[in-house]
Length: 352
Ligand code: TLP
Image 1: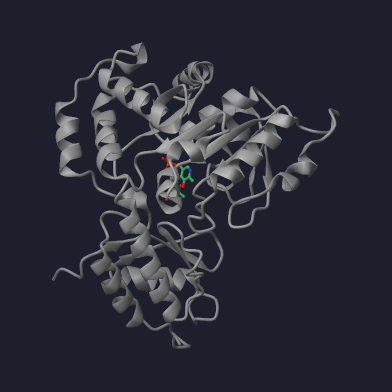
Image 2: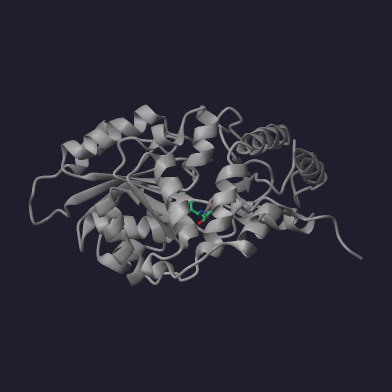
């Protein structure tokens, strides 16, 4: 017998392409993008560069490759990257900077994923053989680990100014900068101002099946093209993928507000069930539910949810479970998920 419908809150990366995307992919005009011949990729790159207020952009297969290509261009073959302790670059990219181009990542602890120029002071070290030279500062908007928290345009600008004052560049990991723009009712370009490079994803809340871009000056993008090829990301008739990205940008940005409302409702519901959730801090499409004091371990809760047809994931090795809302889980699904969770009981202590 079929079980209950699976409600998948593991990530917004699980979104299925829309019918319009599938059609656009099937009928895209394509060429060999390594030669720069793919008209659909070129259209997507131009459109994203304009949206971000940058000179140029480059289509890459994944957000991780986009971040790493950008950071490699900025650091050369050594030097240091300052990034928030739990940023994707510090925490979730498999130590790629050290592995690939010999750069150290120096973690700066954040508040709700953000930090201020004063937090960077200790990294502006004298040129001394003890110290790796900080070549780039990275910020992440929205900040995943802290629960999709946003940076304001002004916050990013002050970090950019501090980095530039010390001869470093600013990279923005904007995998979900679209969500930040909707939450803050700001233009994406305003949130990117001051950054020397930006990485954005089309394959998360925007529902495209594959694809990210890095953007910056024409010189930065030319260098990133070399990094992309070297990292194995030079794709050929990539216009089939870019076509979905163009539809994503035209049809799936404004609707992110629904995901944010659904996350807020889920946050309230989970808080009502005794989980540690900062409802007011649920700004975008992520809910971080702390299992401490509920009688659940994070792993036990994730497994019980799975049996009830709800997929969520542990944020890390700690007690927090992450739920991400997206186009394929509706407001009604959220209510259903809360009902199913309310019916679960941990082995020993019941929920409040
Ligand atoms: N994030 C994934 C996991 O890797 C954690 C997710 O499910 O949220 N920057 C940020 C801020 C991200 O959240 C992610 C993916 C990336 C970069 C990398 O993108 P991909 O998965 O396309 O390499």
